Length: 65
Image 1 (cartoon, rainbow, N blue to C red):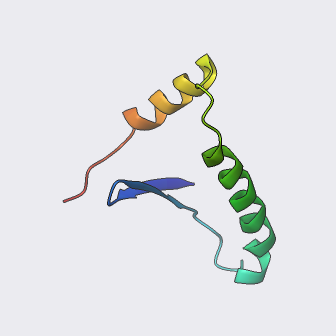
Image 2: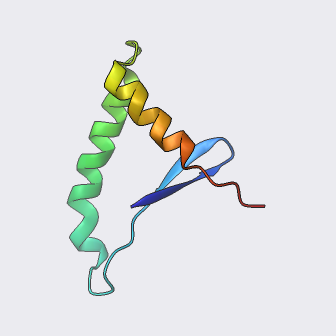
């Protein structure tokens, strides 16, 4: 799994085997969407672990031009 930024948004990218079809990822993608929506809906301050994880992600960003 990876991600890229487009217009200020982080876009997730998955590297799937060629034998995997859309029907194989529909349920996991829907579950991910639910968890993402719940995470985006909270306005609680980040915990120390969450701040550390965010820092790890931002340190790995690459800018494409």
